Amino acid sequence: MTPILFAKALLAALNLPVSESNVAALVAIQKQEGGHQLNRAWFNPLNTMRSMPGAQEAGLQVKGIKAYSSWDEGIAATALTLGQGNMRPIVTSLSRSAPPEETLAVFAASPWGWYEYKNGVRVPHSYPGATALVRSPEALARYGSTPYRDAPVPKESPKQEPSGQQRPSQCGPWRDLEVPRSTVARKSLATGAVVALVGGAVVIAGILLFSRPLDPWTTRRGGW
Image (cartoon, rainbow, N blue to C red):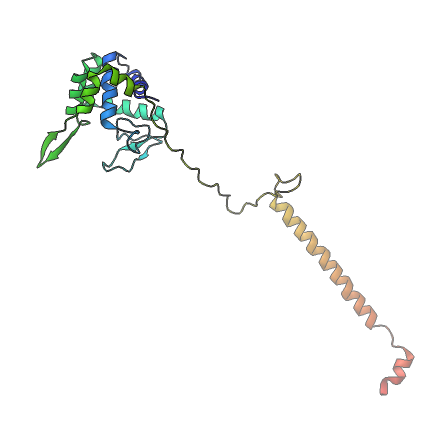
């Protein structure tokens, strides 16, 4: 993804003219905002705060700016933000393909723009880098065609087995099979029954052995 490609995709998502003036203005706004390229607002070049299913806090000084899960989600979030009622002047400027510097001025004056409050008074910030970019076709083309850096790949959390579920055996041809609990229970009962029968047989044999009549010689020696 490059700033020019992002600008064109955003204009297409808003059904606005993909004109040279509009692309130049949006590329310059991306440079001024610095999202994704200069911070951790991944896939969010304009630093929007729009919530999306895959969005997370970017962890920046300005709270609320999001990091998205993909370029598609970042483009959709930016388009939804520009579709808000308080952003209508920006969309109006883009809809008529106003000169880039005019669109920059409209963006700067919007709630999304570049300013700060001092003693309750809004003080606008200057944006010389963005202005210089739209005034130089060569610089605009060079910056606009430079690919954005790669976002870090999210780490997958380790999978945990459901509680009470036995891990399949990892050896032999049956490693992918699990023994049903009912089968284990039946085998346990059968084993217990066999042990009980063997034990009973031993007890009966003992009784028979010691209940036989004593040897005559043993009887006669019984008085010793």
